[in-house]
Image (cartoon, rainbow, N blue to C red; front, side, top):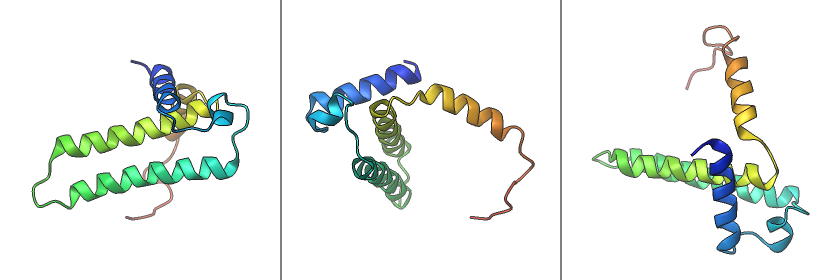
Length: 108
């Protein structure tokens, strides 16, 4: 499955299950407030992935499923906004390849 297919599948499933109101489902009116709420859901999935790292015994499968949830949420959001993630990921990777070693010099 390619990125565009993942986007479509994620969005269509969210619509089918009633996770988007009708104006979002038909992509006619998506407010910035609604977009913000979807970003919060992406964040919640990242937090769940973080929690998997805090378990005494690290379960890579459980962690991987949480990362999959992150990708699904991002794909759903991108499809809702007609964003071609494949294009932007390709462009971003190309841009990152031009950056110097440890650009920004920020540490974790």
